[in-house]
Structure formats: C-alpha cells, structure tokens
Image (cartoon, rainbow, N blue to C red):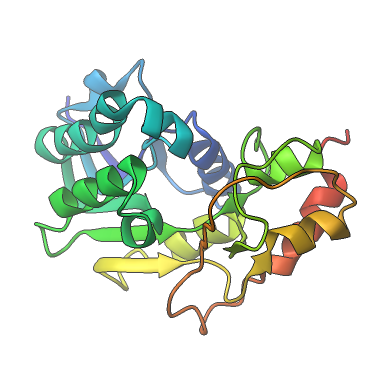
Length: 235
C-alpha cells in the first residue's frame, strides 16, 4: 500500500537531520525519517515535501576525496530527484555553492543545485555555518577545544542555530522557490570569537568568509552562538 507523508526527511540521522527531527516532533509535524539503511523502502511513497538534508558537510574531506564527495553530493541528489514522489523538493545546500567555487566542495554543491533547480517548484536553501545540539565537528568545536583552526582568523562567519533554520523552513514551505540563502543577519570574526571564549586555537589557512546574502529581514543573530558555546560540552 502506498502511503502519504507530509514531509520526507532524507538524512535524518545526520547533524542537520537530527535537529530537524527534534523540531518536527516538538511541533507534531508528520514526517518520515529516511536514512542509508531504509531509503530503498520508500521509493513508492508520496510526499508533500521531500527535504534533502543528507549532503556531506566536510570540506577538507571533499578536497581529499573528490570522487566520493561527488557521489554523496551530486549522484545521490539525482537519485532522490528521479526515484522519489514529491510535490516539492527542498534541498539543503551551502553558501559554498556561491563563494567557494574554486573548491571541490563548492563545485559539487553547485552541481547538485543545478539538478534541483531544473524543476521551478523546488527550493534550494543555502546555509552558512550552523550550530546546535549534536554538533561534534567544525570550527566551533575546534575553537572550544583549543585545536588548530585551518582558516584565516580574520574570516567572517554568519553563525546560525539549526533550530532557527528548522522552524524557518516549517514556516515557509510554500513561500519560496529557486535559490535562497537563510541564516543570521550579521557575522562574527573568528579570531574575535576565539578571544571572547578564551580559546588558545591557532589559525592557519586562507580567508574563508561564510556570510549570508540578503539577510536583513532575518531575526537570527550570530552573537547567539556565545550562549551555545557556554553550555557546549556540559551535562
């Protein structure tokens, strides 16, 4: 029997997916979590909205494993587009598809977007740096642990809480199509953030600005990341 679900969430076991799941359950939204283990079980399922939150977020891994990153980012996006039934496909991408086209990571993100955008009803959401429950890697974790950060310390990051993103999506499922960047309306300079949290991290790398474009209408602020970092790692 073919079932209908309001939302299908691809990548529900990942960092983004786990946080989306938390918000969906809190809001009592009908959804189905789709993972590496069960994705073939739902090829005949009808979804109102299919959210792809499964693309890898490891930029340095992508650089060292370009073929695998292409498979996980581009080929799997094409698979979901071709093999699932949905009224609208919502693709969780990255601002790297705009500002890092000189990297494998950014190039593959853009290629995946090119697949999704062929249907004018679909929505591509480009995210910047994100944080929230279940975070276990990335710039914030490195700074919190005083590890080396392989980015220039003068880089500007628009940090956004993943819970804010999940709620924004729920409130705007039908309001947009095409490509839209969502996140905090301001940014933090990484070396200033490190100083404020008393991190001993060294910065060693190129400038990597991750800023959300056209963000003036959003109410999320990058400075909220300080509250998260104060609690991070504490039980």
